[in-house]
Length: 193
Length: 193
Image 1: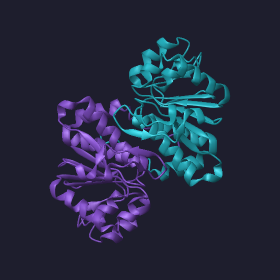
Image 2 (image 1 turned 90 degrees about the vertical axis):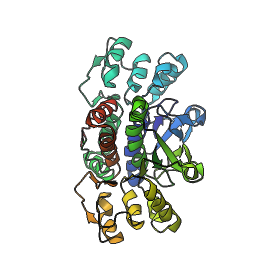
Image 3 (image 1 turned 135 degrees about the horizontal axis):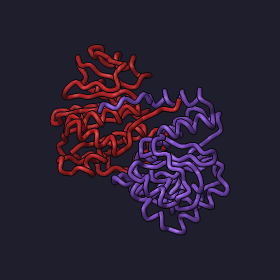
Image 4 (image 1 turned 180 degrees about the horizontal axis):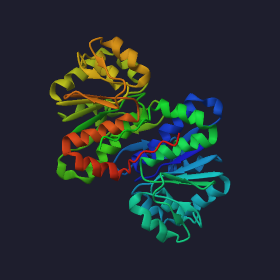
């Protein structure tokens, strides 16, 4: 199971970008053996950073052992950085989850929880300095779209979660599969400005 | 007001891609005078194509006169193509809305409602033939990321809604603003496969 964490103040695309990639993959290719679900504290509706309300699939307390955990970012990460219960929970997930991933300022939470100790990592462009302040042992790579350090993958801001999730599909099911998913969501980006 | 229509079977990123771009813009730059909201029939929770459940901001019956309407796509458009009440509703919105936009197979609904008569338009790559079948007067432009035909803008599949929405910001508030929004969501896409 791949678990995407939802919380009040999560940036919408931080969560839904990876969700789209991973849900497309796991629905179209169930033979690959993966599933993806969203989890939130208490299983309650979450109010995202820009106001969209999403119902999670399940309560975090019902989260099974995961193959991959996804921690999105957003303004809602600010209170989490000093929320010792949340940081403890993240450390506990880390103990049993082979692959921890984050999008945007989700990596700040990982840094505060001590998961990025002496690792290369990235985050949202505006939070690069804060990431280094939270843990000076982190080698901040602020020009990368995402940084794959084996057991931990961090991404740049918001839309970078789409690229990171495609990379995840590539790691877990191969490049050919990831290309099929890319085609499925017609991801041939062409920013007009 | 910019209205994004949500419905059962809407593809998640079709709706949330434009939402992220437009909500980032309207929250960060309220001085531009726009707002964005989501609408669904009865104001009820919507189950998206890949299973995510989203609560709309309001009931479609409470939708005010709009400046822009966004019709996303997804498997849920199939029943809408022969839903005469929905097509009638879309035609009624068209009468009072200066700018009608669609993502992915949302353009199939516009075609079925007669909105694309003799216009250039695009859609999801897999639905290009169906678009031409629905209205043979449409000039299908299947190599474009989006097609701006003045009062109607159609986009290619799923992730193309992000590019279309940035184009919308550019049309409504200028290229400099659209570049700021692009930076805000760190949209420097780099597909890894």
